[in-house]
Length: 377
Image 1 (spheres, rainbow, N blue to C red):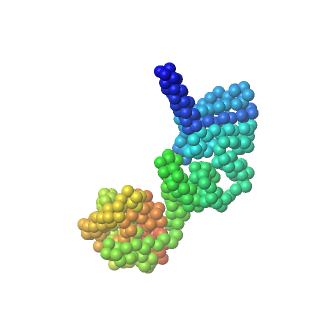
Image 2 (image 1 turned 90 degrees about the horizontal axis):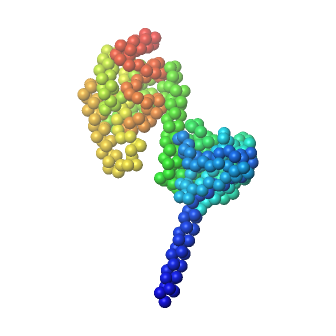
Image 3 (image 1 turned 90 degrees about the vertical axis):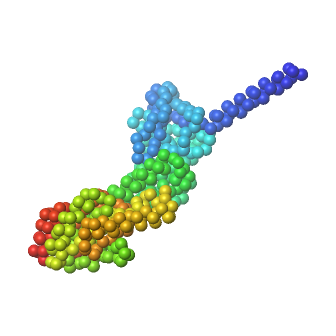
């Protein structure tokens, strides 16, 4: 009886170990290859994250027959991984399915052209097909946008969009859509975070390029239409016929507060000769903080900033009437239009509404520029 009981216990233990082993294997990821021309070389597997340097996570000697078999028993986080042999490489998509085995069959000479057969990962094979078309210039930006809209693999489409569209500002909406889908499925992924950072940087660069094209001496000054502290809207274009110093500042900016007396000095001297100041304050709560704040906190923060702005106007004796702000700090619409990334920053606009100077500072410099415009008008 005891012997039968002991055998039963032993059987259960063996079964438990077997089941545990099977479970462990099924949760891993295996990458296999049969690459002609790679005999006796080394193969590397790199983890790829948008905007960051690739990190090597495995390497192995390729057999004399050009085959390799790399297992990751603990699995791999969903993402993009390069299989690299010498200077040749190919990217794969690792999904969140357990027990994934991806097999690559091809030739080393054409590996980077994605002329391979991939089994065990439909998304990897689809990406290889897409890459082949991109290399052959058989896909355009509209095709990538459609892919982002229809694909069920946000990891794959995000990487394809990044590789094919780059940081071109014209395609930021496609990038945003891809990243939103990626965030919905993989909110904690490093790829999700870094892709969002890449898009933000690309957007800032694009806004600067647009501003550089629009904000130049002789070009019409773009409109600024924003509310004053008491809610009245002032338009920069309403001041056409006067010489205008368009001044970006903020109550919290110490260099701005130190520059204000210079602006006041010139204003008081030439306000009766057709010179005025249009001040845009970059006070307020940065909208990038909104997701971490309640609606009440946003309202309270903006009201506190508005009051500091009002106080600074009075303290610095900025007596002209044209004070405006959308209380969005450097996310201000006007700051983005004029490419303002640091303050104080001032532009001088002539009587015709054209930009006469893109950067003036200090009483002497401002006065000299104003005098030149007064003399020529």
